[in-house]
Amino acid sequence: MQQSAVPELAHTHARPIHWVATATALSAVVALSSLLQPDPATAVQAGPETRSAPVTVTAPNPAGVDFPIECGPSKALVRMKASGDLDGDGIPETVAVVHCDAGSGSPPDGVYVLTRGTAPKPRVVATLVTPKDRFTVKDFAVRDGAVTATLLGYSSIDVPSCCPDVTDHAKWQWKNGAFVRSTPSGALGV
Image (cartoon, rainbow, N blue to C red; front, side, top):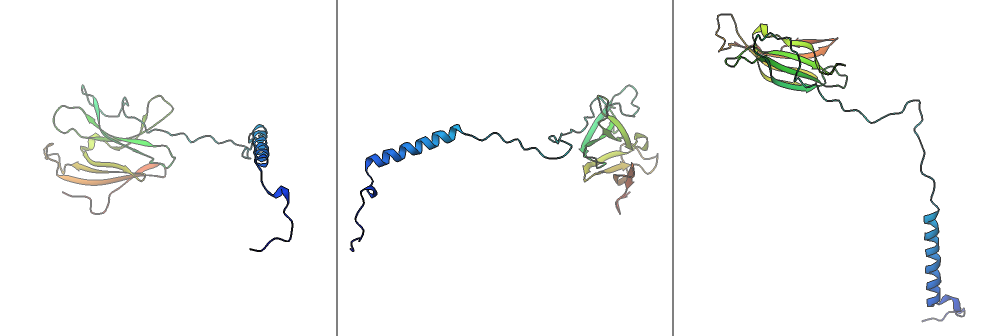
């Protein structure tokens, strides 16, 4: 091993007092830094408007809605319902399949679109199927801004109400301020 040409210096050897002095100095720096904190951040986003958290709007509940259906002494019964944004405004609508609670048989259905208005309860804004058309709704859904349904009906008034003999597939979409019905190709069957 080669010896150093420079003589050893006394302060290059750490003694216990050096460690104590270093630990004390380090503790003082940490204590002082915890007392001297920067002010809280006050940055705001520039612009004339302030944004709040997005509001979640629930779809209208069809319970208690006065549907445009004549049931006589019976009451209107919501058989099926589905919700989704049909007009692209970011607020969901509810589509309800309603018929009279006749107790027996298969009364015809009505299909109604509900929206949340300024009134305390939802209101009917469109009738897609009226009960006067004598359809029963099957395979009903709201997807991608459209209402789809399979409608079971009758080819004539001579067909008994128990046995629909016509199947019609329908789709409604909001276009130019109204619901427009389209029938997928090959959907009508007897």
